[in-house]
Length: 279
Image (cartoon, rainbow, N blue to C red; front, side, top):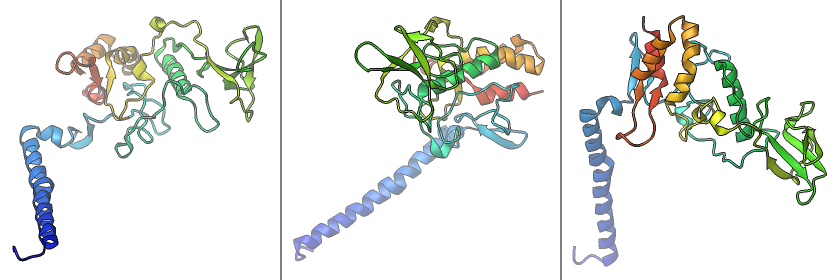
């Protein structure tokens, strides 16, 4: 071995290191972790699957939609929060929308994050019989945003950019200038973007934030306690049971803060809906 050229010895050492590291990190470590997981956390390691009547109906770790064939919410079930994972809760497309608070102007091919939130809040308000109004939203469920021209100085034109004609603008005028509806195909990029808060205070908003926004993974199986309580009267009415019974089930399926202090209490929607279906 000592008589071998140095470059051959270096290559042999590299091959030995590759073999050893492959065995340790590619075989022994995964086997050890899998064994410990199966021994101590078997249900979680296997996906926390939930079965009903001999068939798997979902996972306690992954949310799902409770809608009919047309995509409309089924009234007798609690509804999950929105999902940006594929067409909704797609485990192969787990993702957030990647849209931020500055995304307030609709484009021809996509509604802005603000308009998505406003539309969801309006729809949930109508479904649950509460006000779906929230700041920076128009009464018809669009983002309350103006494009003002010129961008600097006294305005001479104002357009409710998210309300296409013939819609009636949410505001009659802005700083003495009549507000126009947006004409499809017209370019308003040169205007100054002015979100309008409106007369709704945050404290008066009836629809919780998690009801109108998706989670970071798009797979969150939980909703807030506030959103569950908001849905309780509708579910009780549709099922013909007392609302106190439904609220009791909500409490049974509410998990506390992680480690007692992190996050907020949350309700697992799938487990709650399965409990409702029990005879």
